[in-house]
Image (cartoon, rainbow, N blue to C red):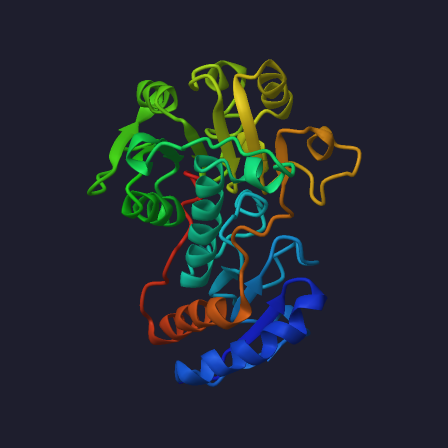
Length: 311
């Protein structure tokens, strides 16, 4: 087996924390590779990539077999006309576990109205009994790897869970909707709506004023998916009118979120700084290493992006 050259082309500040885990994962996979940040382009066999890194022109990488994305999202690179080699997105157990923990925590927070107890004043002994999970309808928009895992976890807590996807899906214990008509039905039954769709031309601005108006009065929106899934002005208007009671937002159209942005200052918006599902070097390195092993063995790559679908 040849010794492939692997170029690390994410942000330079990620190199030190990623290098050790990636070298260890490659060794565990039985791949002897030269991992560096400065390989000459025409000698590179694989590119370990993040869209916020310095590399934008892939045309000099004439022998590159695959670009291996460190992120689950590929919307910032999938339409790059110079990227003609296979592109793999990150599907990693660590990403999935992180997302499940985030979504479960915030669904439970809103389900139990924990904020009211955190801000309770001394002497305020006004018990409010929440419904049981089986009486709380949660809808997950997006039933890919992350959305399906979150839907199953919430169903395991006995929530009444539905999911929506563009194409038909079948998940045991989950009421599945699809297509435009299915989206209207899914939103109409959502006491808590979790947005976990990839960002594509078909999903951008999905939660606009009309669709937000389909949610039940007082619904909660949780968006750990992609910032551009939600029309921000429409969400703020729905919050001001009380149609949406709270929005927990982890992703935004522009990041970091400007300190002047209305989300920071709205009393019914929680901002978290894109922490729901983060590529952790120890777990994502194993996915990268396995794809390099596959490429060297002539086996199909995992998690290849469908350029037409956009993810």
